[in-house]
Length: 158
Image (tube, helix red, strand yellow):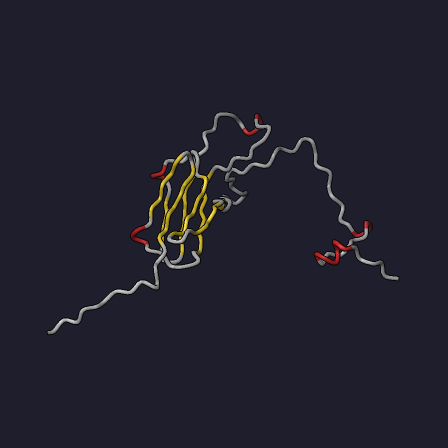
């Protein structure tokens, strides 16, 4: 006989898995080191992919605003490319090696190259865009194109 699914299982569409079918989880060894987010070269000399910058994107009646934390970076080290419908932010956070890997208890800060390409919900005026950085918070203001705006065109006699 089939067992009745719980309210949560019906709501989310999940299926109960029998304890017998659950995969065995390997116990973590005490000697393992904490996860490092530093770019590490693999055995074949290839560098790991760059990190993805976290952003907030919202709109006001006239602008699209993008905010990202880029603390510890010189504003001149950021590469911001703006098109009519996309924005790409690239940079590299250089970590200073003060201690050896064995001396870390925890490493959660991201050091290395990062980038983020954001598809914009509507076209913007590229020439009027502004970027500022204050206390590590990058703010990019992108003025929206007003498609309702009309201009009168004078016809010249040739």
